[in-house]
Image 1 (cartoon, helix red, strand yellow):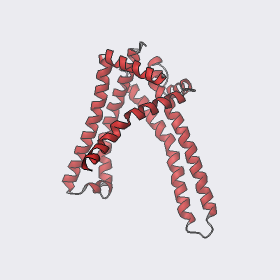
Image 2: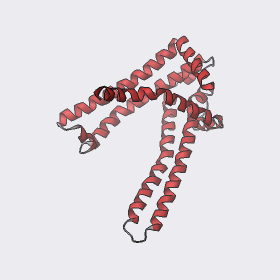
Image 3: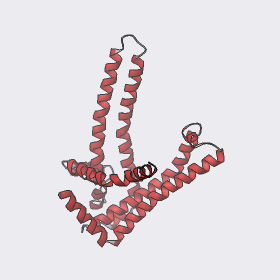
Length: 235
């Protein structure tokens, strides 16, 4: 019931505030543009090399990753700026004040977005190391007649990877509040903003998780119908 009321309130805000609608349309437009540019870049690369699409994951993997990197860095910066604009418009639409300093300082916004991205990636890297190490130990155990010790080490690394993944998810949900902390205190040092956001989100992770699950269930038909309907028609 609380989720439905919150969704109705969000819908009313979206209908009343034109700037918020414009910010959302710009964000979705950039998402569509990024997919289009990536498709054009992939098609151009395949035409120039006269190769099959599978070559992007084979012999031309390095070239394709470099193309993605050249496209991704500017799109990442514009995407985060538009996301900050949406969050600022949401804050204004909800009746809360946002200092102009917090909106106009684009450099600090990008620096804070980069800090959050590095923090997310840095906390996720140990998970890959643990799971990769578990796979290596499991493969090594097959080379020995008594490889129980290797398998025990792999199991411990898998357990450590799962624990680190839970910690990453906890921090990830806490970082959702970073923009609103910045809007409230734009003079706060950048390294203290994530800490303040984690303190503010303490005890609120359950509500955020339920909200994400609720929206995921509602968006599920948008993901499945484009795949189900053509198959049903062909059948």
